[in-house]
Image 1 (tube, rainbow, N blue to C red):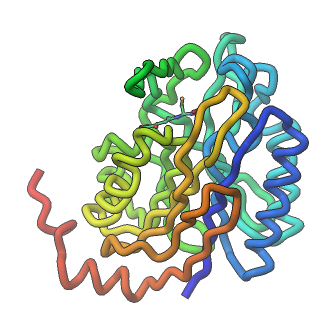
Image 2: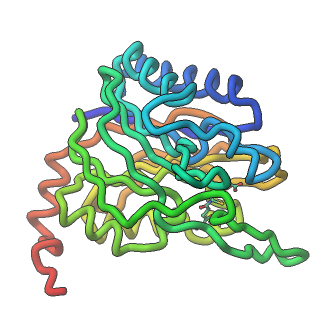
Length: 274
Ligand SMILES: O=C(O)CNC(=O)[C@H](CS)NC(=O)CCC(=O)C(=O)O
């Protein structure tokens, strides 16, 4: 058995405050015995305006957010999947990559995945339309399938809106992923309709654990996110989830014997023909 954590946050526009909140919950996860903890999308900063995050862009490999992550992983002895970090796009000061970075418990960065699919969507709220244009401030990552060996198994990386593109997860599973990480800031509206169903479908169809830490509550922009951070097993069962709309740690013990049993008794991954 292997204990992992998914951390739910209500990120605000104060970087120092967000890092302090993150550090406290990572500490809680480590104290409980978790070997790996995953943070939500935009864990370090959510400003009043999308463009506010550009001021926090860090060069690849260094900066206050990345230094915090490396140091915290080392001090707590826990691997961290850092939801997303705003990493500078060389030659484009107007956009950043939404980079999901993985740190080993020694504080070494062992993987980077840049969000591929950008949320350029109008969310209909009945009385008004909420307009998201993520591509105004985020540069899309080149399509890439990142699977990284960790202390808790082979981890496939993705971010938030990627969840709606099952071909990404199929490719990660084909490349050996046993866990899929989906850090998110889902809208409360689309989250209520689709979040749990999509997460459980990705787990079931790819016979992988799914770790999905989410943003929750109201943010500086006035937008609301869905929370419902959860960890799902390869059979689609919800192992643990946070139903409170507040920050906190979700813990689950991953049983890899169960994963192997699911894959051998229902060998759908081996029955693929396309
Ligand atoms: O809300 C914010 O301010 C922050 N949101 C985000 O950072 C990102 C990009 S705008 N949200 C999503 O990708 C939501 C996807 C989603 O909700 C869906 O696929 O339904």
